[in-house]
Length: 378
Image 1 (cartoon, rainbow, N blue to C red):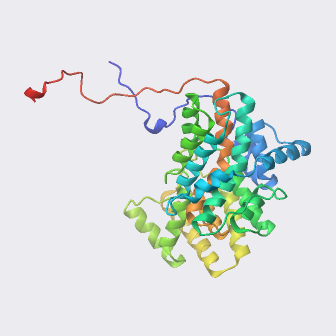
Image 2 (cartoon, rainbow, N blue to C red):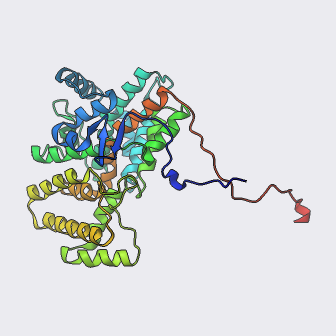
Image 3 (cartoon, helix red, strand yellow):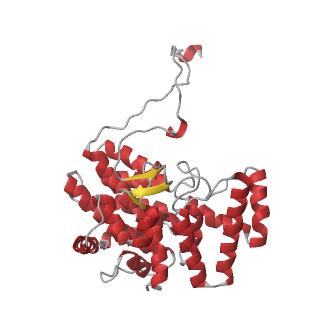
């Protein structure tokens, strides 16, 4: 009998075709629709990247204006949604409240059973427009503040800051945030994207697929890693502790967040761009605390690479960069969702364009078939 070879975690298994993104092995660069993500992050607004991910090409000026107008027209949560959010437990994790918020959006969609391609695209735009307000509203309510509605005069990233804080920071800060949005937008068949495609393949609908993807992203081994990185920096406490902390963590085989990646072997191609944005935030803030985090990060990075040859992933610079922008640590992964909704929905639409139910096999390791023994004889 042929022995079944198990690919645990589906490592190395190719399950489907996709035209959305790929890490090009010859350059080690993540690309969206063929464009290197580092080039998109530095040369384009996030809105342009979102358009590209959904439409396959970068927009012309006219196309971008129409796209942005459509996004702005879809901003705004219903009074019912905000009333429900007011009743969320204040101690709930923002990813849990976001998951529930997206599910509620599905309840409000009167055409939820219409899976036509144009309807999917409209819902993708709607989720892209509304999820930032769900995150911002939850942030304000948890902190005892009244929600701030969207401002149609502001761009995507500026509007998120406005809804969170009631003001828009300096353009340099917005640019750093915008860069992170592009870098987080898409990454092929990662855990949450594959979750979305599996759910979509059953024809459960886009809201179910996105809700499931949020649940997957919440885990610390996936999206929650950016939060874990910031907690790690807080535990380290000071630059002079960083090397000893890392050496001890390695010696005791402690789980160290923000390093390594299933796809990249010689470093995450997104990291240099996000690290530059992180350093820009440190320089903008200019405080002793900001420099403390930067110096800790640098020493932890150098020690890990020197000792193990394992490089940081995107979460390592993104976590502290968000912190310096003024965001609370539990908001980091919901911010990831604000970006990744573009990639998720692109994959959902791609999956449904030529759908086959995703149903893998398993290797059974339990007992052989046996007879039931009557209760009296047990």
